[in-house]
Each structure stands twice: as structure tokens, then as C-alpha cells.
Length: 323
Length: 315
Image 1 (cartoon, chains in turn yellow, purple):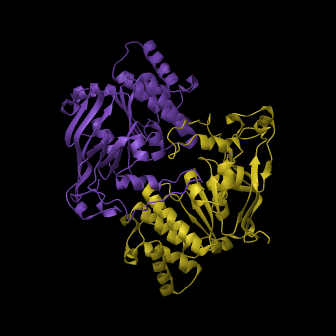
Image 2 (cartoon, helix red, strand yellow):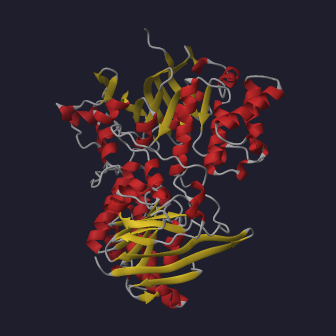
Image 3 (cartoon, rainbow over the protein chains, first blue to last red):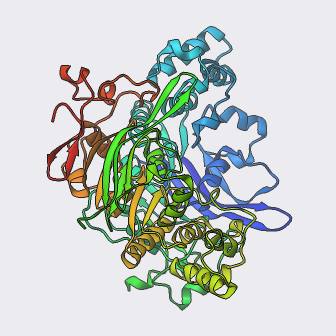
């Protein structure tokens, strides 16, 4: 059977152009997401995770954003060629996004039931009664009593607000859900509730998902495939097993070495030296070479291609340290 | 490690609100041995930061005793307390807002030395500033930089240099790495461990991140809604937790491993309001193990084995 991809990104390059500088946020990124799968985007602040996600939603203002090259193929169509009007019919309907901070994602002066019904009225039906009925169903799916629908966001806790955001995102049963650090603003016991809820809804609707996170624990729990992103490029891509058991890129290795592990008694942290490069002034060659413990001469001169080291496991490194 | 540097007895901090008394810290007792790190964990609103600030009297306690090096600092006058604070410092969570954006690195680090009139000539003062920069791993070329020119890790190094300037023996670290990326977080954690060894420091390390607390702490206090529910060595807390809340909290952390499958305890609902709480176990409403006896009085923090304290009726 031919692979069924919900999303394919080919050679995407996104820049922010201002008077003072050109910021290279995403550099020649390519990836594929199979229908029904969850892909984790892992990386640190400024790696380009959110820019990629917002490019898929076409939510970046142009200017200053410039999508320099590439294709974003969603359900077989390149959405970079679509009109604004067409994008509006996709956003919130076929592709939805959950933002990091539920405190700012909701409108503070509108009751939550109206905020959920809004997206249904926009995309699915003109019948107000049916839309509000569906909105009440969504509240129940995210385990909020429907009687509370008339209340305003400030009357809910952080975890409940995030559940309202999830209800809005899933109200039209999208094909693709992009979750941008959905639990970072939440406490850990509440995070556990929200992750379980997202998992259950995803399973029952067969939704494909991109999970943006900096937490490898969440990746281990929620993702099928993982893209490790550094300075706007995917440096390593593979199944969860590839990334956790046989990662090959020095940056991925560095990420695993520098997090304390709750399941181990003694562990020495090995930090990655230096800091993230300035995206308006990226180093030549491999973007990671100034921080890489294995860098050789060649790494500062040539940019490595992404190589397949085993079935579907891609690494953007010369891998001189493994020879 | 047998001498207690800090001993806190029945510490309370209540805030008056329109809806009643908010019990931020509610009858908390603990001690910290000289040279050790006490980790304090809990979720937002559990009172961990208020506890940290109250033991330094940056927030005045409502009630309780705070012995530092044998002296009850809660009975000191403001003036004497200000001098005492040279020995007791704090590093804040957010290096983006805890530094004055109009001061250079030099001016920020110099400030505590100047305010306390430690040196009477400029050369000694500037030598000390450079020495501190060196201690925390800040390159000398950054001396005239402003905070916005530095990344988060370097800003936090400035915050640590300020805290170290007066040679304290005790530092409250209030979520010092929470705002940092993981690769930078490891750099700062290693720095703090090295400083503790070299300068013989005692830490109170406040964090919501259990993995970080496990890594850095000798003993750990778990807080819930203004109360310490469990206090023990890090090994006992993480390998042999007794309180139902500690167990649920630990099981909720997603581990960066795919070879372990955990039985997760998912708690119902949210943390209740700390305003006028019902005088029974604070965890009652969410506890998966609650029984009839739990409806009664507040459970006291009892020592169930050497140095392992739990506040639960069922244990």
C-alpha cells in the first residue's frame, strides 16, 4: 500500500525581513506526516518550531515574513498557493492549532460556549441551535459541565481553560491538529489530565497531530515520530525508537545528556557548550558546529546533507565521529 | 552535615483578601543542615515561593520562628535584619525581570557591594566585581553589556553573581532554571553545584520541576496548598514516597524514556482555593486513597522513620 501522507513539507525556507536584518527562521525544511500519526517537533527557543507551525496555518504576516521557497502539501494540495479566503475555510476546520498559553488564547469578554460555537457556525452549519448543541457536546468531551458554558474564561482554572481551547480546536474534527507547547503553562498533575484527554480524542477521531514541545518526556509519551530541530533545520528525524534508542546527531545526544532523569538515581549533567546561534547571523557550514564536541574542519565549511542511516531515520551530519 | 543552619518552626503567612484569609503558608516547620540542599517542590500556588521569601523576611511572616545560625531572625529589628541579610541571599526565577534593564553587568554586580560599603576604594571594588564574574563564568568582555544584550543563561549568571557578592552562607534559589532552555539549564545547575562545593553554601532550592529537584537536592519537601505533606531524603521521596499526593505528583511526570511503562495516577479536578480552607487534610478532595478518617482533623507531619516525615492519616 502506498503511504498516505496528510502533510508533506518540501524544502521550506522562511525568513523575517526587517530594515536591520534578515532572520533565517526556517531553512530548507522537508518532512512528511502520515495520516493518523503524531509527529513531535523538539528543539529549544528560537529553533523555528513555531514558525514552521504557523507557516502551515499561513498565520504569519507578510511582510515581514517571506516564505522564500518550498511547498506545504496538505491533503494533496499546496496550501502556499491558496488564496486568503480559501485558507480561512481550512483554518479551524481542516487544520487547527492549540496555542501554548490558554490565558491569552481565549477572549476574556465572551462566554466560553459562544467561543466554541463561533468556529462551528463559521465552518459547519448556519443553524445556531445545532451549533450550540455541538458546542455543548464538545464541552462534555473535554469534561467540563455544560452548565458552565455561560461563564467567562477568568472563572476557570488554567487546566480548564486549556480544555476549552482544545474544545474549540477540535469542534470541527480537523484532519490535522497542531499543538504548540499545549501543556507548558500547566502544572504537572493538570498536564497529565490534558495529555490523556488529547490522546483519547485523537484516537477516537484518527486525527493527525504535530506536537511542538521542548520536553522529551512528552515526546516519549505522545509521539510516533520525532523531528529534532536546530537553527531552523531538522537535524534528525525518525521514529520515537530511532530517536530514543539510537540517535546519531550530536545535538540530539546533547539534549539527552543535559536533562536530569527522574528515573535515575545518580546522573551527571553534560551541558551543551555555548548558546543558540543568532538566526540573523547563522554560522557557515553545519549550524551546530560551534557547539559540537565532535566538530572537525569540514563541519565549518560545508553544510551536511540529510542522510538516511536506516529505514526512515534521517541525520543531517557528516557523522565523522562515528567513523 | 549535622548542624542545622536554618530552623523554621510553625511558620505561617496569611494574606488578607476581600473573600477572606488566604493561607499561603500554613504552619510549616522544617530545618536545613549546613552545606546541604533542601529542595521544595509543589505546583503553582502551593506556597513554595512565599515560604522562600518569608524565611528571608522579604515577606514578613504572620507567625512563627525562623532560626538562622541559632538566632531567631523574626525577632530582629529591620535594621539588624538588613545586616543579617548579607548572609542570606536569593536568586529569582526570571532573569529577564529581576535585573535593572538600565544597568550594565558591572553596575548590577557592584550594587550590593556599594550599598553595604564593603570596599572604600574603587580598585578593590572593581577587582571584586571581576572576581565574581569569573566565579560565575561570565567573560570579562561582557562587563559593559546591558541585560537585553545577554541571553537568559548569562543573565541568570549575573543574578547569581549578585547573590554571591556579599559572601552569603545561605541562598534561596527560587525556580532559578525554569525560564531557561534545557541546554542552558544544565550549565547553570552544574555551576550552582560547583559553587556550593567551593564556597560551602547551603541552598533552599524551590522548583516545580521534579527531575531538577531530584538531581540537585539532598532532602526534599513536598508542599500542597500551604502545607508540607512529605519531607525526606531525596531517595526516600523518589523511591519510597508515602503521601498519596507525592505518589500522584511523581507519576504525573512524563519521563524521557520509552522503555518504562508507568502506572499513572491521574488526579481529579484542580487545586482548591487557599482562602479559608476547611480544617482537614488539604488533599482530601482529590485524594484517590481517602477514607472516612480523613474527614477529621488536619493530619500532622509525623516522623515515620528516621528523617522521613509524612502528614497523612493513613500512614
